[in-house]
Every structure is written in structure tokens, then in C-alpha cells.
Amino acid sequence: MDDEDVDIYFAQHDIQSVVSDVLYELGFHRPKDVGTFLSGYVARRYQVEGLGGTGIGAAGASSVVREDMDVIEVHPASSHPSAEEQLAAQLVTEARDLRLKYANFWPQVIPAASPEENEDVAAFEVISWSDFRSDYERLLQICSTPLFWSFCERRLAVLRGLFDAHRAMNEVAEQTEANGPPPPRVDNCIQLVRSLPPGRLLAFCQAKASKTDDDDEDEGTVLQEQLAELKRAPGPLDLTADADATAPSMNSLKGLFSCFTNTVFGKYLLQIARQSIELIEQTSAASGGETYAEFRLPVAADGAVWSDLAQWSEELGKPSDRVQWVGQLSQLAYGGLKERRSVLSFGEFLSNVFAPLIKLATENWVATDETARIHGLLDKVVAFEVSSSSGSNEPLTAEANREPADWSDVTCPPFVYQMYHVWARLKGLNRCRRQANQKEFQLRAAASAAEGVACAYLLGASSVAKCASLAHHAPLQYLFMLDQVGAVVSL
Image (spheres, rainbow, N blue to C red):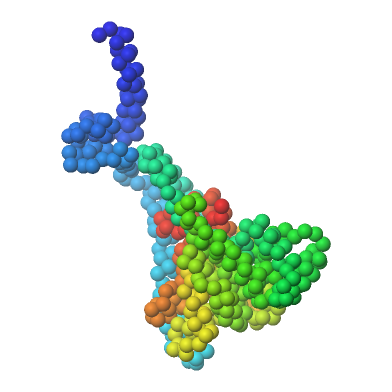
């Protein structure tokens, strides 16, 4: 065989690529038994039955090896970790133990001296605020340790490398799945008041402003007056209020479209919700995949909040199987209610949210239309979310050591303070609901600053929305990955 025949043979079988691939596999896996590894590699690549060993990446005679799968083995750099690595690993364990302390906490019932005590967290023994504050500050200290930070960065880099290798070796399978029927999609970051696309929202506004029917004449007049005061064409942000901001006046343009109780009795928000749900129910595999949604339901904690929400929910109609509610407590909600003198203190604000639900789970209520409506609403509620007002850091001062009943000024408590007290009451509520064989509610948070995200992690939140700081915070990223905490972002 002359040189020309060899060149033809090499070209026909692409020998150069074969040799290159073999060298790459050897360099990547670095097997101890090179012969066994090569036999397994050849068996997989060329589908040779009966060939292969038991080494790294090799298939035995009775093994089934998929073309698009391989084995990734992770070998530690050293079997004897350094003192710094051991210390960093201890910090990881300590941070995770702190979370477990709150995530797995089960409150003890305190016998009530009076029936009124059953309404609030006073009937349950929980981890004290001072203990929580100490644990929270310890977690921040751990996350800010340079040793811990660099350790998490190295671990995340290894995980990203393993994921890239896994994705490369399963490219065919993943592409085949991507080309198949689209899977269902869950959008769990929807504000109810902004659930309609901007174009549909403006069209809805124009239709309501031009209504001349007897039933809608008064509503249309109110809307026309608000639009006239605007003195320009309205935009989507003129019609809806951010759920994280202070609640708008019920008589304002935003209040007409964003409030459950207003001069049009929440009808605009009701119809917006109906249209949004209809759009979700129209989705299918043919349209790009079925869509499911979790709507943020603003809980304005005045005295009759659950009666109002339940009445509104009943008017909305039969619940959709594709929609669930998340009760959202904005950090600024208390300040707005305090200015309107709807509540006297932050303690009353919390009682308005949780006391009726605790009563509903602990007492043998007489079945009425109101209690039936509230139970029907709660069947679709899956979680309570505390939403921060901004991405700024709020240091805890001595004022944060007050009890909620003593927080009677108009300033809103810090996000961390509100998260703790909602956690405490939600733990008590979930204990009552478990004893009544009712489903429990998750704790969630919406925060951008690292301190708020860390607080949510510590208190056992199942997921955190916004979380802008998470993209650049290696310790929290690593802890979120280890404990499977969800990060919810809106695309």
C-alpha cells in the first residue's frame, strides 16, 4: 500500500478526527486503565457488541449504553482538603443548619388566657425576634467571609463545567426533545393588575370609556372624568399600580383599574382578570404549549380583607384549573393603610391578614355564604409572599426591636422585620390548618437586595422573586442550589 492509498483511507474514515477525539477523551477523563477505557470508548462510538471493560466510561457485556449518554466522574483535586476548605465546608453546613432551624420549625400551642389571643401569634410559641436577628446577622457574616465566598465560586465553577460537559454529551437527546411537542409552561411571576398585555389593557380602557349602556353609564362617566384630568392619552402605567408600591387612592385612575373596592366595586379588575384567564386557557400544544399561571393577589389588610377578596373571587366565576393565587403583602401596604387610618398599628395589620384564617381553621364555624366563599378562595391560594419596596439595604436599628402592636407610626417596618413576623404567623396558621386536614401555605419573598434574599433563605422561603443581587452573589447562589430554593424572574 503506497502513501496515496493511505491518504485515501484516512480521508474516507476521517482518521484524523478519530485520533483527535481519542486524545480529547483521554485528556478529559485521564483513566488509570487506558486499555479498558479505550475498549469501552470504541464500543460506544462504533456500537461493537461484546467489546468493553469495567473502567471509566466503559460498558460491560450486559450494559445498555445510549448513544447520547456518557459517564462523568468527578475526582477531587486532593483526598486531603486544606484547612481553609474544611473551614469553608463547616460554614456551608452552619448556613444550611440555620435555614433548617426555621424551615422545619413547628410552633408550640400556648393555652390562651382569653379567646382574643387565639387570633394571633400570641397563641403559639415561636423562635423569638432576638434569636432570629442574631441568626440573620450570623448568616450575613458567613456570606461576607472572603474564604466562604471564594469556596462557593470554585464550587459553582465546577458545577458549571459539569453541566456544560453533560449538555455537550446529550446534545442529540436535548435537541430531539426541544423539537418535540412544547412542554407546559408555568408563569409564576404575574401581577394581577398587570396581567393583560399593554395593548389589550388600553383597548379595554377605551371600550369602558365609550360605554353608553344604562348599567355602565355611571362607570363610564367616572372613567371619562379621570381621563379628562390626565389631559393626554393614557398609557399602561397610568392605568395600573405597581403591587410593590403604595396602594393608589380608590377614586384615582389607577384605583379604578387596580383596586378590589372602589367606585366601580372592583369591576374593572374583575374583567381584566377574566380576560387574562381566558387567554391562558386558550393556550395549547398547537399554540406553543399550555400555560399555567400564579397570579399575585394583593392583600390590602384592612378589617374586611378576606370577605372582600372572597366576594370578588366568587364574582370572577368558576376557578380555572390553570390558575392559582399567591397572597401578596407589599412592604408599603401598612403605610398606606395607616395614612388612611384603616389600621392603628402593624400588629393590627398582621391580625387582619392571619386572624380570620386561624379562626377559620380552629373553630367550628357555622357554614355561611361568607365562610364558604373564603374557603373557596383559599382552595386556590398556594402561598403568601412578602414583597420588598426597593432594592436598597435597610439596616436594622433599635426601633426594629419593637413588637408589631407597638409599631404605630406611619413609617413602614423594614423588609426583614416584616418577613420574620409574617413567617411566625404563617407557621401558626399552617399548624392549625394541618390539624384541620387542610393544605398548608408556602412562604415566599420578592426582594432584590442581597440582605432581603438572605433573609428569605434563612426563613425557609420556597422561592424568591426579583432577586437581582443573586446573579452576582456566589454564596447565595450556592446555598440556593444546595437547598433547591426557587429563583423567580420575569422574562
